[in-house]
Length: 356
Ligand code: PEP
Ligand code: MN
Image (cartoon, rainbow, N blue to C red; front, side):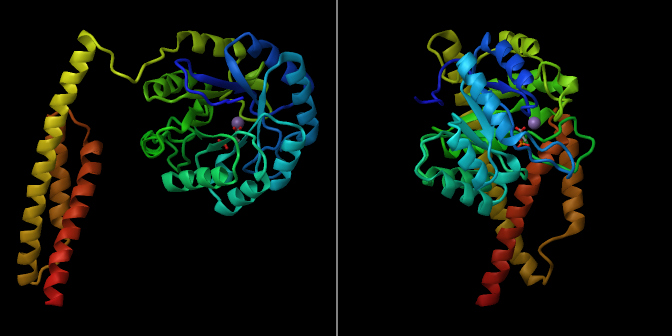
């Protein structure tokens, strides 16, 4: 059986952050069974920031999940973080495993898990690492794939930050899952709005955004009494709220249809294509000037980087951006790249001169 098949409907994974008691697992599953949930999630080994917090019910919880599957015919998934978790999960016939963000971040740990998975066909989902590093995420996926498991999917759960002012618990940094999908177009990517938000009031909007960004599914933490949850109480929602979110979710197609709207989209794309061609041509011209500048600076024995000039660029371009209703942060990030490239070009001129 293939778990991760792309369909028009998003693949829904739901269930509590942690399997707390037999009753809680059953109560959640009973409610989720009536929704379009394909896979029940529950943590049985919990990675906690501080020692002394509840760290999961381990094997006891696996027993409850087996009972739950028997009763409700719902396949289930648990997080594994060590080879001994993998062994236990495989022994108990867990349907799908997932690697958490704090595991994906460590290639040694991922490799040990991959080694423990060898010979098994269980599907595995790999959450992004806690830090915003697409290569590390892709590398973890490759390690698991090389173990020969049946199927591998990715879960986007956002990235840690020290930014205390953010509304998110973990920054979505959408460009990272988008880049992963560009590299691996057949990869099944699921969004986890619960861990991105850290707050149940934001779950719906993030889920909706994920649909607009072509994600294949959603993993949403669901608990019969979220405010009493033993872990992640602020972000869990009731099965009833999940039902409402799923009913209201606007599912978007990513292929252009024929007809009038298709033609309008095509027309806009053509206009964007020609503007992009102009932007690239202009960037080429700008870099020609950088080369000339590099030669001049060399002759004049000047430094390539000038803090005053960079300050002036940031100020003027931000003002120009605002006049065009563009966000100054966007223009600043673009200019950081342009300026960096310009400096590299000038350094090259200097080095070439030095070699001659
Ligand atoms: C979880 O899914 O409950 C969990 C611990 O997630 P993450 O690895 O994304 O923090
Ligand atoms: Mn959680």
